[in-house]
Amino acid sequence: MTNEDMTGGWRRDLRHLLASWIYILAAALLALASYMAGAATGYAVVLFMLLFGLVLVRNVPSDDHTASTVPVVPQNAALPDPMPMIRATIDALDIPVFVLGRGADLMAQNSAAQRTFGDLAAGQHVSARWRSPGILDMISETIETGAPNQLEHSERLPSERAYIVRVAPLEPRDAAEQLFLLSFSDISELRRLDRMRSDFVANASHELRTPLASLRGFIETMQGPAREDPKARERFLAIMLDQANRMSRLVDDLLSLSRLELKAHVPPAEKIDLGPVLGHVRDSLAPLAGDLGVDIRLHLPEGRLEVSGDRDELVQVFENLIENACKYGQEGKVVDVTVRREPGGATEVSVRDSGPGIPAEHVPRLTERFYRVNVEDSRSKKGTGLGLAIVKHILTRHRARLIVKSEIGKGSDFTVRF
Image (cartoon, rainbow, N blue to C red; front, side, top):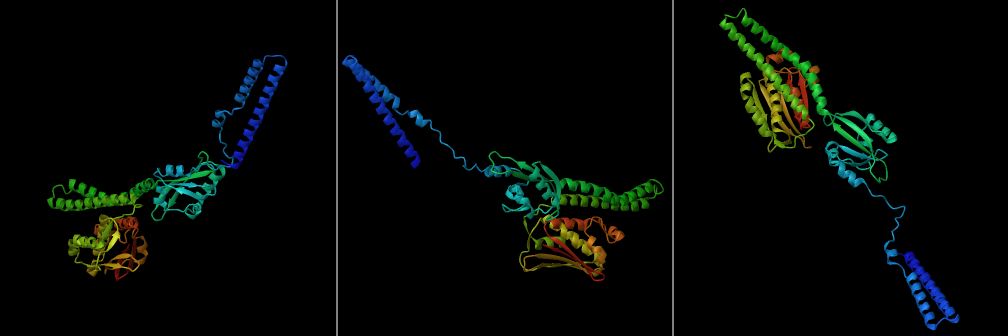
């Protein structure tokens, strides 16, 4: 209780006391007047007592008065903070969501946003993370007008992603200031599917046309002129089987590439020892290398060579690189596979052949789908034109790089840098 409350109570008690004495004095004077007017003494005494009792009842403070007193809330009292409830709500969402203030500064983010974009400091302006003029203009317009907005936004690092970005005003009850909700809906898979459909129609149809035309021609020949020629049928069937196998490899590589694209943004977390992986690849390619007269030499340092990766995908990477080195560099007779560790923690796996080399103008395009330095040479070696594209997508998912160096007459060096 404050000093002001105590002072107010003392004054109320004093007023009650003075009023009681005034009423008592008035009752005594009334009784005395009745007695002087000739009333009986007993009547005057009863009248005084009755008036005295009424005065006491009138001036006793009521208990209900104190109990019904309602405390007054100061007008400048702080409003409740809505942010804990907002944080709990957005954290239950599975898409990245940010809460912005009127200055386009970050006030909160949910777990999905932290996993996708990293931990952004509170109070940081959105331009510190997104420099896209479209996003910044959209946020500014919504802050000024209060109308929701959205647009499509793409990011290329660490992997290519596409989002529908939406900003809308958030109006929590009793909020001290206007807040805004910034959300990112991932549509990367939809865009990839559209792109894969167009790529498949444009590239796969072209690649499949040649073996299909070959099959059709041999079938027509076997139904016509070679109908009664057993030797021709046997030779044609062998060629038809080879063309069918080629189409099967092409379809398998396309499916493998599509699966890799769908999970390119999810880096593998498993720890893999590169030594056993490279040993397995060398052993599996030994029959092919023996047929081509190539010796695969493996050079490994001491100890474990751990990297974050998916074992099956890394096997696919080094099978492609070493098989290409055996096929296209077989003139050199040797393929050297060397693992190096750098002091900074990076690990490099180099696959080097001593073949004819690759012209410099072709090197930047080697990882494009269906790109070939020599089309006839590639097809004669049963290549689909997708091997290095698959390698590139696997390494992108592993946050690794493919470095290609080649010199005419001295061979080629394909290095994977983790």
